[in-house]
Length: 161
Image (tube, rainbow, N blue to C red; front, top):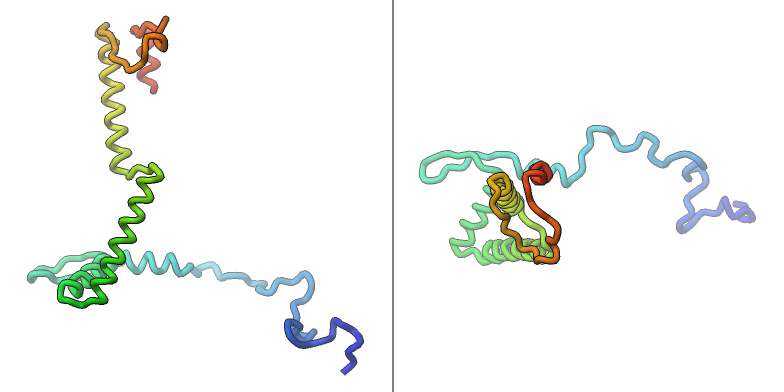
């Protein structure tokens, strides 16, 4: 073998010239086939798939994820220490996620809905008071509201908010 040309050398991190990728050509020309899903999607779908469970003589359908958690709970209640440790670990991790969400100021969907309903009620109440000519209750100070006279003219503005 003639070793004067460095391109022809083989060894560590230098495969034989014939098996190297050609310049300008992909190592995977066909790419990932179209129907292939990733592992995360498969796990999600598998855990969401329903299973039949019989409790107290009655059959009901629950998700695989819920059935697994129920099974883990049953084992923990029977005294299986590993199941108890795993169940407590899952509960702790879930509590940490909720705590982190609260620390970031994120609201749950239910909390957001409650706040939106409350804001709509307050808005409707203010519109009704303005329409009736009653003074509007506000937390703004006198300097913030100087020259502002809530009247029927401002009613469309409030209804659009």
